[in-house]
Length: 241
Image 1 (cartoon, rainbow, N blue to C red):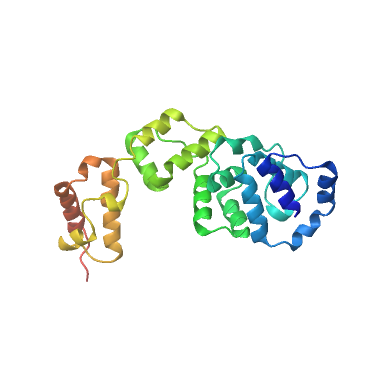
Image 2 (cartoon, rainbow, N blue to C red):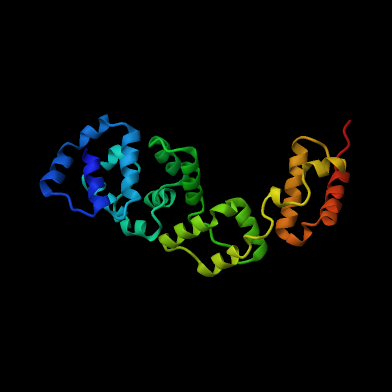
């Protein structure tokens, strides 16, 4: 009920009565008896509300040690939470913006978040300070590592943090239509096996080498060019004893 009172205030845009807030602070240690699932649910509703910055009340009420112990509220930019849509991953990633990827994962795991939410939030933390490339080939490699489907999410996150290079982001966005993953290659594993490639781990390595070549130069994603490169890789394979 302590968290729920703060959540109602955030959701409805209401203030919390002074006496109620004082009572919450006085009884805050009782939160130790509340399940992490319930705590997570209330915090999430605050963060995706129309007033996510009001999660500062959780900190001011002294409840945060029982919610997200790693959170540091000193001079925290709560207003940054309003700079992204009311989407769970983005709001949580901003709320945990001072944590390392490992700490982000641990905090969300402790709150019983699902694997997909944790993975996406950790990915944003990993790319929090990574410069956006300003050259096309580097941009394609960047998108391959990030996952092109997460690019706009990262842009929103970095823009909210105030660290987005808009010009570089526009260049990277221009490469989203390029072949960026193994499924985009015109040759697949069966094609390489038909050419005489060894099965198993080395087959996967060859496909990755073909992809790297295509990331460097998308024009190489053509059957003849990739077959020639694949045959060269197969010919260079060491002979088995």
